[in-house]
Image (cartoon, rainbow, N blue to C red; front, side, top):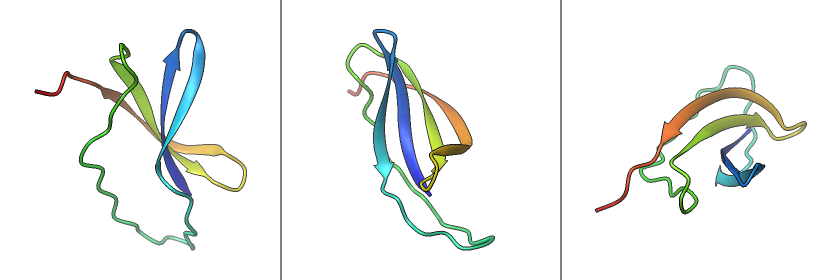
Length: 70
């Protein structure tokens, strides 16, 4: 399992790894805290994806919207 940010930039999907691949067995629960996600410049939205690292199948996804820090 890995967690990544997907953003579309100039028509291309760009992926940024948020949590590196790790082994998850059975119904194991893994607490995840991502206090700050930095999006690409000029892109105000994206999708956080939980992905099966073996075959890159998206298990779950969550839309995110970015606001200027300040």
